[in-house]
Length: 471
Image 1 (cartoon, rainbow, N blue to C red):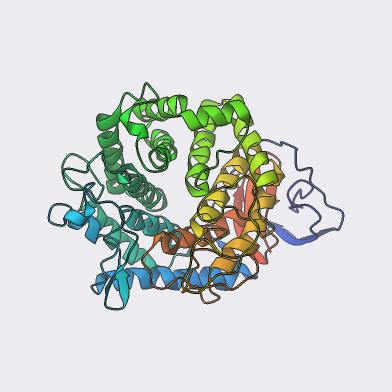
Image 2 (spheres, one colour):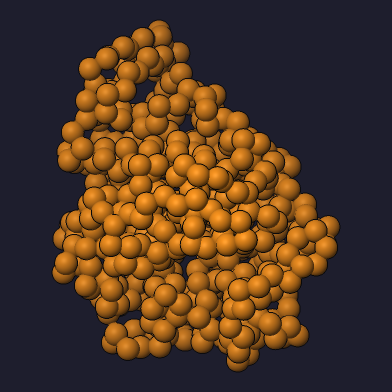
């Protein structure tokens, strides 16, 4: 049986595709079309990610993806040899007061040996979940046994730090539920555990994520007014609100209505979300935090089939693209959105802020995740276009060619500096973006296979019960 992929709406605009497609054991069909165009505003139904365990990248993304595998292993190996960056905050809640909510961020590193110690950062609990998220995806997608062994050991050790009541943050008794970054740290704990549970069908990680969410519900529910304690976290409560996407994810995994209702109540009562809904304008806040809770709204709207919520998020997205997007595909200046995208500035030695502080890597990755969610929900090609734009420019520019270094900020044209040490947020965010590249090259919809990224690759995908191979 021969089959030719329907590529008319499947490609980014103006791309030429030469595809070799096999249906089962059938004849190879070559399809060439130099006039493929996709209408950015066209919706063509929901898009889903195919099983990508047999996707092989062979173009410009391939060496970066392989470098990311080395990097993820390196991070774990350093962890087990005494550079305990990821789990020490969880293991030392009681004895190390530096983790409690009594202490504010000083903005200074404490140098211990080769790398600075991150104990003064209240968000240091995010690293474990970020690594587990990225490493689980890569280990599952590549079948890398060495990385899979590391993932399994780390997930078990991480679960072992969970307290008997389900708490999985880094705060001591005085900071639990009160510290600015406590919910944020638990958000990433849930993220990593759920990805591990999904990728390896691990019930222990799913149960740990459930218990973490139950702890949060017990602490904060009901979220029935805008002045509730839940909205008192960092960045005007936005860091707490970001957790809603994992509550939706948990609902899908468990069908426990408590989790969905909690997410609904947070969205309903968070003032910045309501203002964005009314105005269609992006709040001038930290783009990383903003993109995360907008992505949570997309997940919730998709689950509840609320087209009106998708519509207002799309209007905010249009405002972001019109006013804030740089030519290199990302957003944000000095970790904030301004009235318009700030011009590029050279970095001044000894003064890392605000000169040269464009496009924080964390924001770049969260921008990609927001667009991926909008693309899956709406089928509109404009979202994958912006992803392609950011991947080939901002994301790859923030990563070194060998995958072992990352930028905190990525200037548009002036001097770029690799961030020293592996001790801050972007070192764990960047790998999450690279880890998802094979999952973004192709997509499935009601009409067939979409080729999203202009990347040399090979894939074996399942479509309507048939095995389809694409080169």
